Amino acid sequence: MADEKTIRYKIVAAPIGPDGSYRAWPDKTTYIRSFISERKRQDYWRRFVVPKSSEQRGLVFQLAMINEWRANWEFVEAPRYADLPVIGEINNDLDCHIVECGRTGTTRKVS
Image (cartoon, rainbow, N blue to C red; front, side):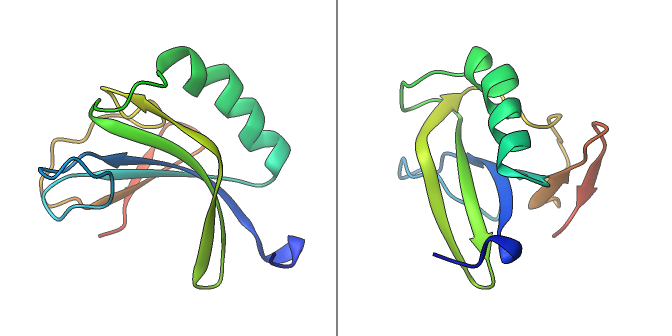
């Protein structure tokens, strides 16, 4: 496990692709929300993600908590699924590949 100080706590909403797998796709938007602590992420997950998502696979987005450090990352708990990204506003800009969702509801295009 990584040093606690280097961990970035995130929730990712990855879209489903034509092959049924969830990951970043060049023609779909992936949403990422970062948190300053595990406690803040868990609170957001419990309050916003769980009520708006399902355990059922096959929906448009897979929502997953990940711990990221340097070039590594790991899943935390079981993922959830939803037809909307839940952690960010839908962005219809097809040039937008990854969107970081801000704490105030704003989004920033990453790629």
